[in-house]
Length: 134
Image (cartoon, rainbow, N blue to C red):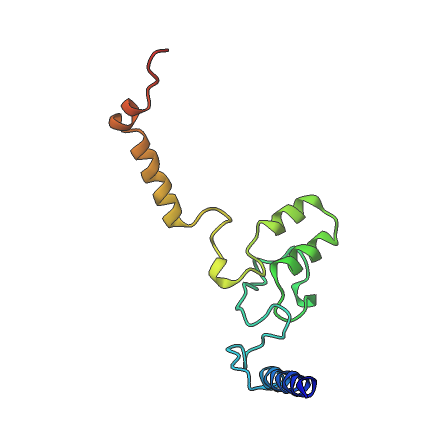
């Protein structure tokens, strides 16, 4: 009798958890990317594709919303090291939010660095860093 009840309880638990798992896996998804081109190469991100600036290779042969990596790889296929370096440092295929940053720190970081250098040069901090007894 105990074995039968225990078997029934175990089967009931497995059935309920299976139904819960199935409903989670097949339920309506609330994807924010729905309606966008998330499945397209390069995704829904707007990218820098100005032909006049990206002229180291034929960009018309690149697929869809091509990326910076696509551009550099296409230039690398020509095997000119100078052009590869130039392509790698270009904005071609980069997300528009990253265009013009030049690969360096953002402006607010440069301001903090400058403020830190100015602060590091102050006399009060220099006095505290001296080594005594040497």
